[in-house]
Amino acid sequence: MPATTGPRNVSDADAADQRLHVAIIMDGNGRWAKQRGMPRVLGHRAGVNALKRTVEGAQSQNVGVLTVFGFSTENWRRPAHEVSELMNLLKAYVESDLERLAKAGVRVRVIGRRTGLSADIAEVIDRAERRTRDNTAFTLQVAFNYGGQADITDAARTFAERVERGEAKASDLTEAMFERFLSTASAPPPDLIVRTSGEQRISNFLLWDCAYAELVFQDVLWPDYGPEALAAAIAEYRRRDRRYGGVAADDVAVAG
Picture 1 (tube, rainbow, N blue to C red):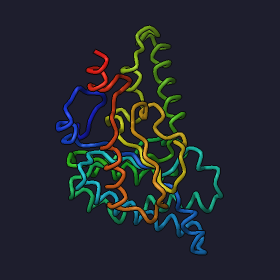
Picture 2: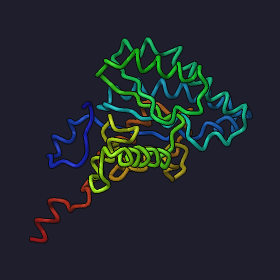
Picture 3: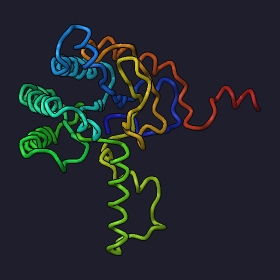
Picture 4: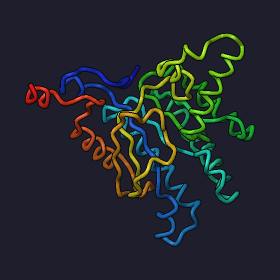
């Protein structure tokens, strides 16, 4: 697995060598466009360029998995023309960058509900995943038609259906087993979750997976984002003391 997989007893030096899973809530496209007197859709288009810069930069910053929040289960409430634009941007991104990503060893995964997506969007997603499924250098995970609550609900339903079929008992369920039913199951939990634009909330993103993630909020609108801002977020992460519910070694020594 290309990134850390959760709490581990490792030295600071070892931790620095582990490849990170960074997740980003790409926020601020609309405000970026409004500041410039542009339609919101142009902000989303500028956001695609920011994604390309950030993906390229992440690969040189000890990141093994990058998860980005592309379209949420709640985004369907937006005006129809904006939803259509967001769908078209996914297609445009895949069309323009898929071969480059594939040749660079990037594996593309799309997490979220496939139901409700049009046939052409489903085909684009399937094509991107098939073309890159054997790549191991870096994973780009796109949360599309995704919501943390929906993911947990779907996982619970899947387990309940197994119980109904007699394939499992309710008493079999553990946290580790439940995680296997989530759409995020093939990736390690995120080490760092970043939200851009200055907003400070999680917005239904990776609710189960973020249990011990470090949160960094940056006052940068997403279309202005890139490798430098990502490096600043990672630097802030490196300054954190991740204890996973325990205490730091120094605190144990003092207590003793």
